[in-house]
Structure formats: structure tokens, C-alpha cells
Image (cartoon, rainbow, N blue to C red; front, side, top):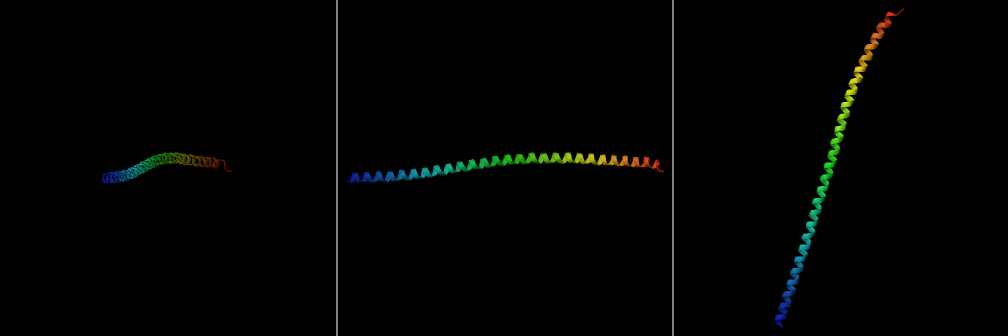
Length: 100
């Protein structure tokens, strides 16, 4: 009977070791899944950041184009104002000839 008890004790001990190893493997597996989820989250965040950066760059380009267009328009307004002033001065000279 003693041999049977020893075998039973060894089987119990082996069973406990197997259960402990299973728990450790399960914990490792969960950590692996958690790490994979974290990497996936970081990857998604980087992709969103890249998309946002591209949108910002596009908007900055649009603003720069608008500034250039406004500068060209202002230049045209200044030129037109100068032309109108010259025309006004010319009309003033002509009107002085017809003074009574």
C-alpha cells in the first residue's frame, strides 16, 4: 500500500505542477494579448495622428494660397486706386479750363 500512496502523492504533486504551469501559461497568454492590444492601439493612434497632420498641412497650404491671393488682390486695389486718383487729377485739370 505504501507504494500506492507514494504513487498517488506523486500524481497529486504532478497534477499540482501541471495546474500551476497551466495558470502561468494562461497569465502569459493574457499578457501577450494585452501587449498585442497595446501595440494595436498605439498603431491606430499613430495612424490617426498622421491623418490629422496631413489635414493640418492641407489647411496650412490653403491658408497660404489665400494669403497670396489676398496680396495679389490688394496690389490690384492699390493700382486701381492710383489710376483713379490720376484720372481724378486729370479731370480736375480739365474742369479748371472750363471755369467761369
